[in-house]
Image 1 (cartoon, rainbow, N blue to C red):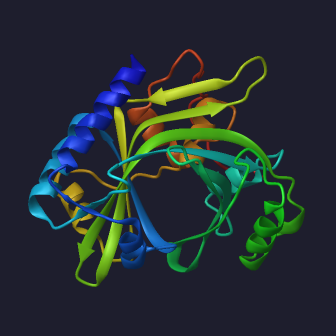
Image 2 (spheres, helix red, strand yellow):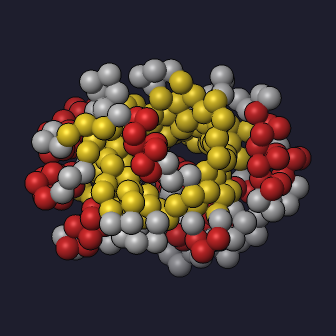
Length: 284
């Protein structure tokens, strides 16, 4: 059922954006590479997302990333953290020097990258990445990760014992958004699934009824941001890593993502309820 629902949601999203012209990857990167950017994330039920995207397609000159005739791509991200989950806890407690290390694989082509995300000035996100051969291991990429984190002021970066943990999978459509001061981009994710190794067997959670829209640009809101606001949608605190870990590991703090979890992610038999009133005031 969840697989069929995810496919249906993806079909509806693609149909809503079908009237828009395509844009090639080279032009998209040139217009809006945005490795340093302001991210705004929105969580929408499928029906609400389709209404917004229908209106976007009829009111702007936005274009959809198209590669070899395809307007969407399947993604897999493997997140790396220390045994005491330093990356997770830094994010859960909103520390300024928080970081995220992951591999990202474009499943349709098999191409993988090793990515390091950190917080830059004024709340912007800085992403740095290199091509990587083995998405399930850091290997020689540990040098890149250590040097990158050290440059960004992360304590003990070269010696962090990072190991693979949470895996997320989803299907993504990317939109180039015109703006008066340049261009922004947005991603539309459907079919999101999390998987985490646990004693006995992996724990998984799929949310095929939801669409995650993320706008990536400068401090000036994009046309899509303003359209979402007109429809009553506001940015949410959502981290695919943090939210997934908090959802699948009930003993972890969920503070920054509690609203999203309670509003959109109903409990399942694999996820027990938390004790009311839990806070994120927990040291690494």
